[in-house]
Image 1 (tube, rainbow, N blue to C red):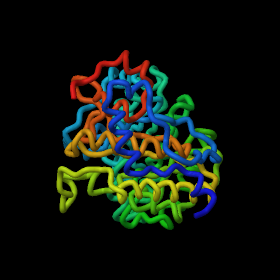
Image 2 (cartoon, one colour; image 1 turned 120 degrees about the horizontal axis):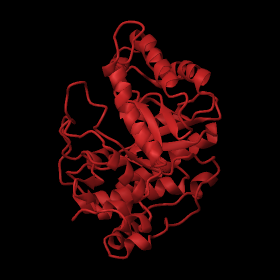
Image 3 (cartoon, rainbow, N blue to C red; image 1 turned 135 degrees about the vertical axis):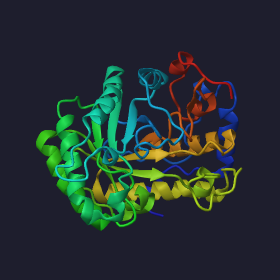
Image 4 (cartoon, rainbow, N blue to C red; image 1 turned 45 degrees about the horizontal axis):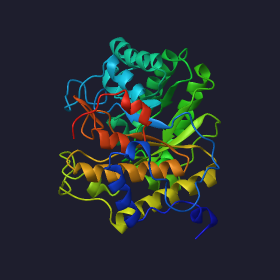
Length: 359
């Protein structure tokens, strides 16, 4: 065991069970358990992102399709800020709203709709990550879509160049299939150079291959830039987080529990991978997505959410839960889910001022 590994917290099954018991008690929101054992790993610079919510299944579905989500309204951004988040991640399928021939013009109406959300986030003092999501054609044919990919980002960068620093860019969500690290890294370098022409100091987020999972961190090398933040996603163990998911074939069986030694070992793997990446590159990291599907029992979702969130914070990594009101709910139409809010460690004083749902 390396020195770095000996300094990280070890999340054990017995401790996890005690955590969940505390979380389900009335006093949990005001007195949370510190991470067990070890010392935090804090040698990498922090990012502006601490506590983030994904605006999932809102703007990233195919054009004309419905994934069961709803469009955000101003009140959503107010509620997100009021409960204690400091950031929202804004996934957008820009590729569905742009011409397929040069100059690949993005539909002005799409910019208008996106601007509304960016304006609301800015109004309520939230960071907002403008993310290019689900460019599926790029993953199948990177060379054939390279020119269009670059052109889309030239337009987005120019459009938002006068926005405050609280607006961040994320170049591409979850590269996979043919968009491997050795293919995507040159594209990221080219697009970052274009972004820097109009946005010289804006924070830019980028992740590696295989859906930006922790394995991508072994070989991912972001461009050298003081305002680049690397990202990864964490949905392990997958059979727990995606139990009963209709879009997974075969769908993992539900209901499933979280809390075995093997389950907590995934958090050790996350810590190992992120520490090695930070020591190798010195680039700050951001956990851009994590969460467990609604078909999981709520108490198990709570246990999982708490464990992953605490591990990320102990590693000095900001996090972004998937998602706000869709599929992996943190909030429902009648209000926030109290035990999920508590699992995310949102400030107790903010919780008192926000409407919560019955569990």
